[in-house]
Amino acid sequence: MQIKPLTAKLNNLNTASNRSTVSRAKVLYIMGTAADTVTNHTQSTSLQIAANHPIVMIKDPDDEVYSGATTTHFTSIIYPRG
Image (cartoon, rainbow, N blue to C red):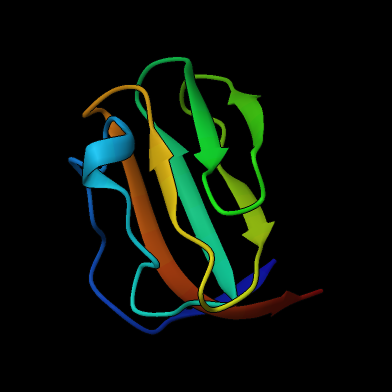
């Protein structure tokens, strides 16, 4: 998989009070060092991620996301190919 980071990673998006659009990203690379729940606050949806298994999330630029722990990192990327 080929990805191009657009911003530095963000962490500490834990809890709804710390939610972010992550620089109005359309695509996020999300990696956690522990199992966690990632929530799209705007869409009222969530998903579970496994420790050390990155995922790619597609979202609208204004969607705000957050995680349940400070061990999850979010990076805005260009859509992966390959």
